[in-house]
Image (tube, rainbow, N blue to C red; front, side, top):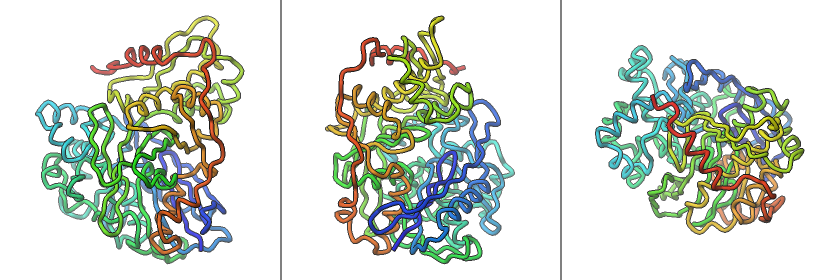
Length: 486
């Protein structure tokens, strides 16, 4: 028995077919466009996400038989769609989008942040869905009119995909995605009327919150490639990666290198709160209703910094070239790059920070900048890992985990082993495992844990002479802060 995983990321959709040995037997991938209508604004066209989903699924399913579908997704992105036609009245506002910074400032200045942090485990930042919806309510009355009259649904990308897969029959989200909206009470395990009122979001427009595994609907053959399959697993991408890395016990942690990087540690049934810039979030919800929680450090720009080297500067032709280029120099030549291209996330949380490169000289080359970019990713992750309790080994995944120079730099700066699994696409793998455990392909998390396999372990060494120090990195971060405050 095999399972189809739909991994709807920020720049494209990956679909995996995973067999009962938890091996990826086929895959498909389709990019979709990014839209940047103004500086700091990032949008997606929902229909383009859906068409990319169909294309990637068609590739992955060629010659394959599957018994269930699991979904994982870019989190926090706000999507609106017509309940009847499933057409979107406007583009989705992406998690990277910073337009609601003024909404956050206004609510913070009014004294609401402590209460919101208590209820949600989060903080006021444009990153989260709730303030994006507030902005839409205030600035796009045409689209929002459907929300208030009930004809338009509100959700995140998982909710939108379930609606499309089921022909509009189901409007649901799982607890891991709900916990990223600023509208969900993490102690009570449901939508909060208090938060909905504060952020001007009609509760009736929100999806039903369901468990992260177990059947929640079926795909409609007319909508989804002629297939009628149970949709049996849903989780936000980072929680899915935690599941896919078999981090089932409290204290186990992982880092996913994607568009951004996200470090999570399982805290079990306990809501552990942080005063150091980490987020408290739901990892997953069992069908029994029991919640597993996590602490998270959210870093906004890591893999997308490498994409910027490719697309913005043109100094590499493809992302994997960054490793070979960076290896042509022994260190970054004193260059330090802070990739705050959409502000800073954990632990600094400064939406007004901007990308900063310091230490440039006449001798600086594109190789130095490539190496400084990899060093920056490693330092950003260290910023977060040092705040997590009792982490002794870091499991890593995501596209950039194929970069062995990056992983060695990561082990060196953390002074701890870094483990790379045999399957790097653990976000999609996690969605498949959730759907599989939800339909009986696997019987328990213990059985799933036995399928996890390590590919390579990077042991910490001594950083090269002349390499950027962590202290230099923090000095550069301070210089990046507040740049766009006006």
